[in-house]
Image (cartoon, rainbow over all chains, first blue to last red; front, side):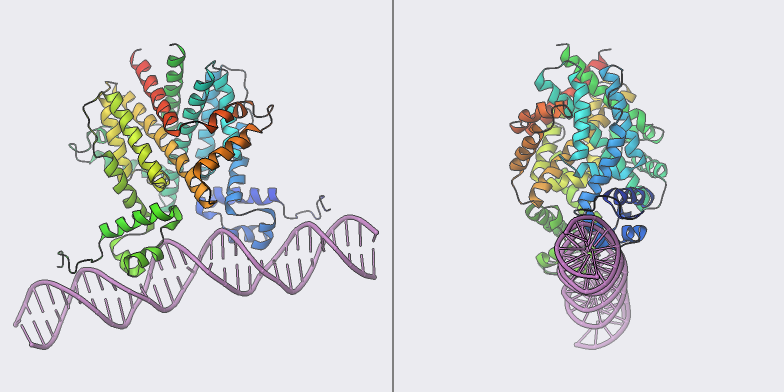
Length: 222
Length: 222
DNA sequence: ATCATATTGGAACGTCGTTCCAAGTGTGTC
DNA sequence: GACACACTTGGAACGACGTTCCAATATGAT
């Protein structure tokens, strides 16, 4: 059986995944097409299907490649809390750099990339010294919060790209709309609109993680 | 201008949205098609486009209709914490009943349905008595956590439907796979697998909300 | 050299969102 | 009561997509 390379640049799952990531990064979520992929790999759609189940499989594999890279330095020497913060920030940055990872993650329930994240988070949560039941609650809350931010970030970037504007311009425009809302109907949204304009996504994200970590700590102290 | 009804069942945005919701509920996320919608409304695709911008607009409008219904009893007489819990649970239940709302919400950044949620949550957070800065942090954390759970729930249900199995069977199968993972590579995931099988989505969700509320409270107490 | 198997490239299929336009329907004017 | 006019409708047509299919080619074993 031909397991060895047959010629210098034969088609392979890895080459297909690498090309998919390049396509997703450069053209956005809708840029990954079997036609575009065929062209870039100088082959036909049928050849790709020999190595890949379907588009969902391909997307999940591409997502997993990025997540695996991000989660690789899982166990640092710091405290569990700091490691969780580092893990979360690593994911945030990875999704910021590859927005399509955010939306793909949402649709990859229970699959490889999600497993990696659950395990890395879980190991640190476990080191926090909670009861078995609380371990699951804490890990699940962190996971879902991270996924929520990931999804929103992905949606923002995707929307901005689709309308051919800058991401920060889009958020600025949103802040303007919010600040012009009816103060009677939308008092809160209106009041945070100005903060919206100059806020730091990354810092806000970390503040949310700290809020959950604080909840965990106060629960342990009971 | 013909603002009045011209005949008993003329086409209208509301009738289109209602039909879309029915289609999404009965046939799932992929069931909403301009062709299926045309058939159900006994008209053509072009007629629908007269009342609706595009599919995204239609999806957002359908989502907003459900969210508006859910958020309507926004201000109860209970404590802010309890109201937040009730709000979150209401959303959870709505998304459980209409899984497509979960995925649509993810893609509706800064649009009507999201605005409703931000405002309702924000008003209660404000009543918690935090600094202006902490208000945004708290509301944003709650929002993203809810969206994260929503997205995952939607993905689970969608996956189960696509593979024509029951949702709980799917989760059970996932628990089985997890329990058979390599204990060296996936110690945490393996250890929570059994808990997974008999867990209560709703209770877990609420526990996560409580964790965030706990973090908020401990931060206020500083 | 020959054969079986693994792999390739591209044509073809059905479905989707969307656009376009000829026809139908109602309203206001004379 | 007839005409002009804008609003609304239904369905044909378009281009792009994911996927399937298959004839052609390449590879490794004998």
